[in-house]
Image (cartoon, rainbow, N blue to C red):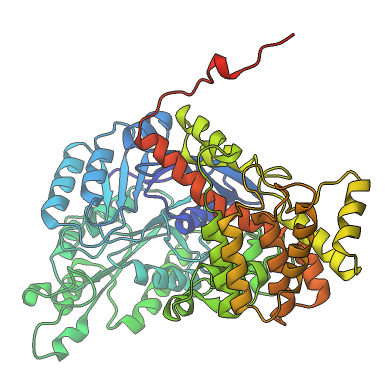
Length: 608
């Protein structure tokens, strides 16, 4: 694997299994480093394609999303790094698929718990085909000032503190991603910073080893010294020992193997990583540290002394003229996300929508402040939900029951009314549920089911002005307006609408007052004297009774009642109810597999 550096300022990657935060952190790092092009060329998200919007500095960009690895590689032939955020279940298969692509040179596997047998196959394939695997169980790697993998080095604040926005002179490799962040900071304090850092991962069989990367660092002219952080367990560090003994590494190496405390325990201890478990004396941290020391590496007596050893080695290089500390530069300011700035109190921004009826920001949604669980636990019904979402208050049970009765009685009125007819014709044309439903709903208006609000409005005005039924009806006639809520195409004075009778019976039994309904009945008595079909219809019954509900419940002020009638709340009841029937007609036609409807010729009057 020796070769040279893995990444550059033009390196681009394909990101597998979309994760917004790691990608945005990569793009923010790009901007910090002054890259001209984003380091993420494309995203692979099985089952979806299109684009994902993210920020590249102040500019919002759209990164292509592909469903398959092969398609992504074909679309982005210059992207040679594959960053795999798949779970341990699919990480091996997707990584192998990536390694088999001719354009992919480096694969980073983030997942922990990848089966060891699968990892061995990946390692064998990578070696046979001169490719590099970083991981599994890794945070990734970084080339300062050029490119980073996923969440490597953490937040932008940490990256700036560790001076990773520009290249330093130190090559660093570790098994631990978390300790890498710690060492990036340490190295930045006592040297001119990192040139490249790699976390190989903590599994027993890492895709690439400590010595693989140390030998690689030895071939990079910009790397002047190498820092290695190993850990107890396994024998990876001994390959580095052999390389040092054989003279393959001619740059100073400062190393420490963590886990020396394991000897304090009476029994074998498994540390955080799968590979961090000593399998004998040679795998102990003490033995590895001693072997590295004897091979020529600078190995301190403790982790606490590690920083001092790094500092001493770097200062010696400077004194000998073997390196010149990199000059410091001021990184650009990363634009802060609006949400973050708002939370920190730095900015304020106007909202775009106001909502007073529901809230989904907590642990569970609430309707008018009432938690969803409370609605279910109290055994509330559809009428209660309507009272919360429409009227923003919990109405008495007789009110919510009346609402439910209105919904039930108005759910359907057969296939011949205009709304049902439209829905049936649309469904038979092969259209979907929503299209069929909407075609029926669009017929609701002054002539079909949309007179509830007008009935309430006119009955309320006439009653409050003290008009007699005669005065009311005759004044409407002079204006050329039919009385809303009065009249039916089929029902007559001697054949009343059963729905109207049921509503009136419920109201007389449960409502504290039915003054508006009684006024509507008086109007009906007068209109029946004129024609037998001028009966109080269901629109008029619901309109007048809803006025009684609003006024009699004592829960609404007069301005609130006027607003409810004016906005169109009452027609909403008919729309809600009739949607049930229209959906039923749609399903009925599709279940019956009815063909396209064509109106018969004999039912049309053709005339000039």
